[in-house]
Length: 500
Length: 50
Image (cartoon, rainbow over all chains, first blue to last red; front, side):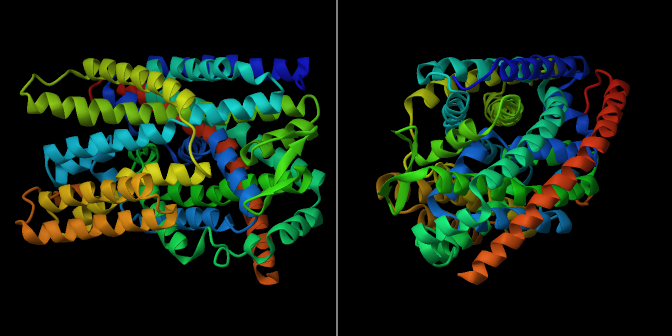
């Protein structure tokens, strides 16, 4: 065990505080709009905190550190793209201001407004499928981080995963978005403090010159240039630009923050400033991974990179970062860092639980009831359905996380599963908002080809991630244009009053 | 290689500084936003909205 009593006290105190604060949200939930979009009352600063906390989790630290360990500085291009694209969207209001003006609660809801109820249902299924599969690996990797850094025996991994899930479900189920916003604020402050602390410790411990020398010695030019590195290259960069535009506009958990802001102008400010945080969100953990390579990368070479070794044990590259932190952080600091990482874990998972369960309830169950001509549910009943969907997603995550191990780098697995619905959804949203000719036929084709364009090449033809992602976006765009030109223009015109 | 090394070093410094400064600002002003949100939600009460 590398955890001291002081570390345990800090972590347990944080957990009690976090859940207690999260429970406060319950008293503010009076309607489904309170539950899903916090009554649309988010200001700029708390908006930044909740958006950043939602998209910075232990999973983010782990996959970014893994990228840094495996590929050096070259993947910094991913962080740069994600941050710059966010700033561009924030400055221009591209998609997000129109979404906010339409007072949506979920992304697939847009598909009913612009296209049809059937397409909303179809999109809802794809969004829920891609989103839940995407989140399916979170718990296991987060559990791995916590067991490795704290020195808990690996046999307790399942117990750690269960405890994390139960704690975050406790306040998400009862308080919805209001509880999440409150806890996100606390969690953002704590996880950011931990991020800064770890970055200082990692560079101090490994030494900046050693870091540069190790990357140069093991990877050469490929460790710095994303163009020269065969894992990345120009196709990867174009795919990442498209992907990050689609994530920042159509990813359910990010979009929910935009829907929750006070007005469209607030959503632009939140997006712009969070863009700068995104630079650090990617680059800092990648730096930790490179520091782990410099300190622990002494094993046999695999794919051109030495495997991490700690106390004679050979580890996987993804476990190098927590292993390094476990060995360099002192008592007290380690407790703060683990509490920070737990904060990151809980803020991400609670938001994702709410995000995907809201799609199940609002975009699958509700439209299905409409198709079956059943009486619409009251706001209270909708909240109950949301809570049940939340429980279902939680249980699924537990079992999927235990039985599935993603192949290759986790970041790329997450990108590919996200693209299952993002390629079609992004194309349909752009077409729906900015092209009058876009219609239902084009929408169906785009969603179908976008999903097939990922599933077939990646899972059956075993193409690499770059080409797969690129193909999915190209097929989705082709589907929308081809289908729209074949059919008659859409009858669902978005009212001028819904445009900012 | 030197060009990329310098570029990423500069990007890392900007990223780290932005991260720290925005965190400090959000920590202070985010609390105020949160209190305002509570007041508005209380005023909205249990109304069915939007």
